[in-house]
Image (cartoon, rainbow, N blue to C red; front, side, top):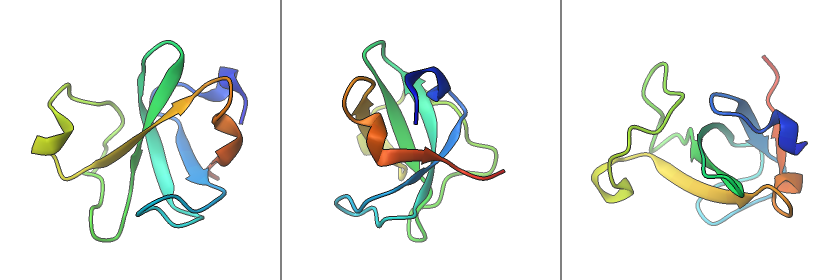
Length: 84
């Protein structure tokens, strides 16, 4: 995916396995922190709340949502746009 496509609310899919996130998992970009973005994963055992698209600012430890950061320069190659 391109950096210009990495905007808050964009649905993505992982194109490789990560710890606790199998290849093909769908997520949503829920935060942009300048040099990177954070993806919230929609996992079977930790699903995203209905309509989720933006991080609420609460510490991750208080949430059930699994989130991972991706550098815009080097890590977006591991993400593809999800089909609508």
